[in-house]
Image 1 (cartoon, rainbow, N blue to C red):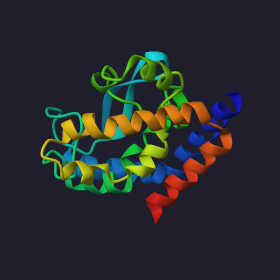
Image 2: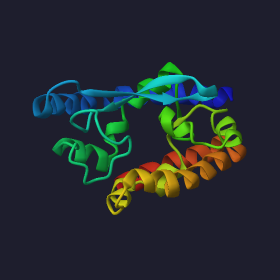
Image 3: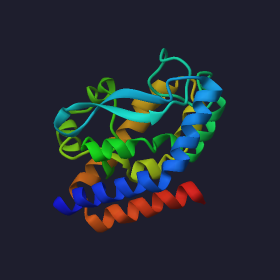
Image 4: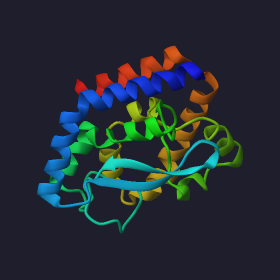
Length: 195
C-alpha cells in the first residue's frame, strides 16, 4: 500500500522532529541515571522473515534472562519502569519506520525464538506485512507487564496463553487492514497512553 508507506514516512519524520526535545531529555536521563548505552537493540523478525534490529530506549540492566519481562523484573531500572508505563521507550522505533523495517501500525515484531513457534501458515501470513509500533494487541495488552508479573512462570504464560491470542489478532489485522483502520488504531493507542 503506497499510501500507507507514504503516511508512515511523513508521520514518523514529523514525530521525530516534534519529539526531539523529549527524545534528548530521555537519552540524557538514561545516560546520567544508568550509563550507556541509551538505546536497546534487539533482533526481531520483520516482513517476509527478514531480521532487523529494533530500537528502544534501554529500560533494563544486563541482557541475560528471559526475553519477556514482567513489571516486577529486577532488571528494570527506575527510569525504565516509567518509560515502559508511558510507552515512551518505543519512540526510537520511529527510526525503524523511516528505515522501512517497520510501519506505524502492524503486528508487533517478535524475536526469532517465538516466531519459530508460530504455526507455519500463521507465520507466513503475519510476516506478509511490515511489523508495527502499535496494533490492536498493543492496546489490548498495554499493561502486559503487570499480567506477566502475576504468573509463576511469565515466559510460559506468554507462550501458552498470550502468544496464541496475539497471533489470532495479527492474522485478523492482515486480512482486514485498511488505512482508516490504521488511523483508528493510532488514535486508540494515543488515547490509552494519555488517558
